[in-house]
Image 1 (spheres, helix red, strand yellow):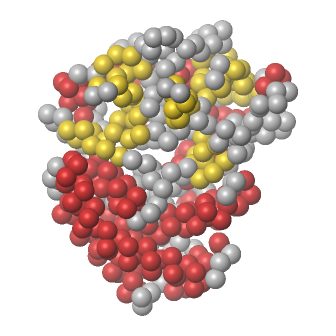
Image 2 (spheres, rainbow, N blue to C red; image 1 turned 30 degrees about the horizontal axis):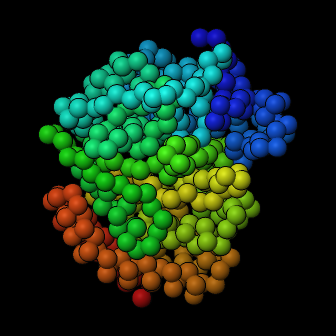
Image 3 (spheres, rainbow, N blue to C red; image 1 turned 180 degrees about the vertical axis):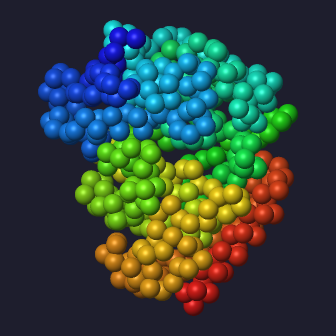
Length: 418
């Protein structure tokens, strides 16, 4: 390892990352990037002037890396210390979230033609589908398989080639993400597919989640929103999650640990997004949806900014939508408080008024949003069940999730006297 990584955006050098002590990372923009008319800051926390702290640079790039058990397994397979963010980024940075590519200095990304991809067989998908602790070695043994996606759940970036699922090689951008079952949480891919479908049915911009059936478990297949097809060519789009935008490490993604709450997310959108009114309304509806469907794990890394061709950010489609209330081991307390309460069973008119103050709207407007969303959720549940069953077959989630969601919707409505 050279101790220096280079950061590229579509073959253009953006900057360098130098290795510090204990796996620390020191990012600096390239003078050529800073002087380019096409340049943009890679994060709201990393202005092009270079006037940012070393911690902000480290936090942005560390937020690209896996967390929790997924990180532990990858580090074990690659023989990298768990605390070595630099070493892990050097090994995995070829296909991160967004448009940046991170490689060892002196090895710029290339665009091989024809595309270098390796098909995955049904037996391989079935072997990985369980999310078992020894399954990661199956892929990490393969040279240059990229397991660089952030988060604690086991994921794999892939491409879709007709009916085949393939592993992209070299610097080919992945187009989809596979998310696998969890030994701890039953039917997690089905749960995410159902809640994401329900979110889309009630009008929220959410990612499309399909299910792949294997001989063992189902796998969630998620279309990447940070990819764009232009004349048959797949291009990466730049994005960053709200922890990156605010310069906060992933270890503090929860509000109760010092991470962003709704007010901080509101301020990011209000100050920086191209269409703040639209995005602020969607942020509010996202928070209310999580309350109504029982998703207690909606933290700042589950919100992102997606940048357009002119480098202007907007709120990205919503992802990682799950009914965590289905799992007894998961706390019911909300990751982001609703202005005074984290308990979804104690959301009252007082909290509704405080929530309205955050957004600078009248209480009646926020009440109308909640009333409309709760009405629409109840109306769309039956149709979502049928669409899910038609598309992906039957699942125990089709009985449990509607029951949980109906109860929560009625509980909230009763507390607010709707």
